[in-house]
Length: 457
Ligand SMILES: [Mg+2]
Ligand SMILES: [Zn+2]
Image (cartoon, rainbow, N blue to C red):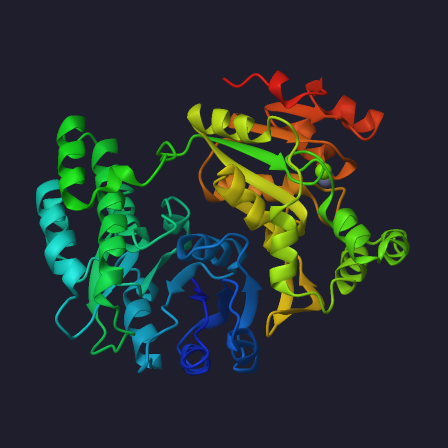
């Protein structure tokens, strides 16, 4: 039997009460190579306690559990992956050993855990009845929504991760569709945080959407039938535009100087009176890490409210909202990319209805910026990405596409500066918008001065 190694991935958002015990128990399991905590903007002591307990903490590039799971997957070294919930009050080493054993013995490719308690309300009242209609073979699983799962990395790479409560059942269906050998393993009694009754409606809706999407892909039901069913289940169609599924095309849009008319950091510096410091930080070093860190240090002491308020009031480039709506209508997943800050990027994404964000993350303490920053791991060098730059949008875009099984040939990119050049050169369709230099202009297929001139197919 070949030597196998296990990566435990724990997506976490404000779990300071349970995170340390979960990390320590995971580290004691057999064959563990690493425990990765993927932090999703926690504002409590989760990050500090996870590190102290021995975890490697990475920052989620995109808000949401499914996105965090994928960030963990991209960073994981092991060939067996275990996903664990961070909110379990009685987590134990035995849980990890139980779900990994059949994988270590190569008796299966994917393990779903079942807990020794009766299933939740969403499981019994929504998930199982829906599976009975659409995927009856999955009715043998006692807990199709359980969040403790383990499997071979190569199978996880084929799954589509919903970025909400639909993620776990979605992965289960994708595993079965990918031909994985799937087993359910009883891991004993688990005490989760109990959800309030009012949270269950939204959760049920997300689970329903995840199952129905997959049923429509495999043509198990008539489209009209699904729509009727879905409206009955939870008014899911009222929840705004849906991205085409499976995702086939991705559009990467630069934020500073492209979607936004100006660059956040310069505008913010001007408003707060630290332009001179910014200019010297920008020219301080040729090393992009050092430069990013010294610019971030200038953010120290500003409040998150101040930063997000400022971001929400930055002017957009004319036509930016329309361009994003148009891309989405043509089936593109829209990703805003920035070598600036997530807290800014999220605000911009919300205003223009972009789907995802890739940016770096400032550290906050009690609502104030500490001046420290984590570079988004998607930007870091990889064999498949850019070989010239230690931090490159091309590398992030290629990783993103691989994680979502999107052909890199089906990408769109738009940007204005030197840091967009590699991406513009390699994306299938690319636009240089008011390019900052001749090099940027020549890297793109098209050069435009007006976002309305982008042709979307
Ligand atoms: Mg730019
Ligand atoms: Zn590059």
